Length: 173
Image (cartoon, rainbow, N blue to C red; front, side, top):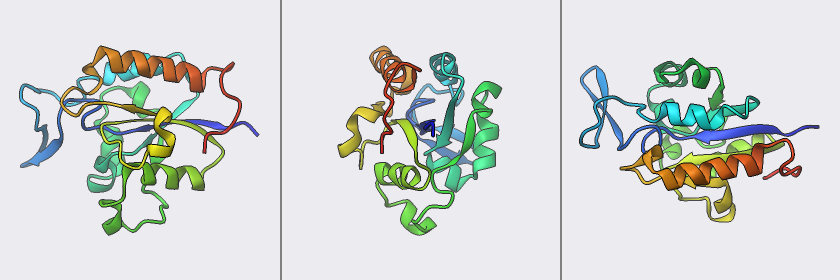
């Protein structure tokens, strides 16, 4: 059986700088100078382009707070929207109240345990709960996101390492 290739995607602090907040009927970033959310969506799209079989699972609070459909629809590129297969909280052992205090790594590993075999990476501005899987986390600084060239280069290398056809043949659980 071939392992699915999954990227666990956080949104705030990854696809745009800062943390998004509701402001009336809009969602805006807390970071100064961010006029439009998802400012780094194109960066992610370009990074994933060589890996058409990589699926996206949302590991963002957006999915549980605003809904998975809303979150997918908010992604500005159809190429990213088409990759999304769900969210970590869907079918989770954690109830929605505990979800918000669970470490992000625990949320991801819960999904991995329910949907193995998976080869996976996570891109997130949170690193809590990833200690045993640090190499599978591409960590972004909240106020920089995928606007950091060093993080983008590290991401590119990890994608190649984990998702190239000639890469790891073992399942990363």
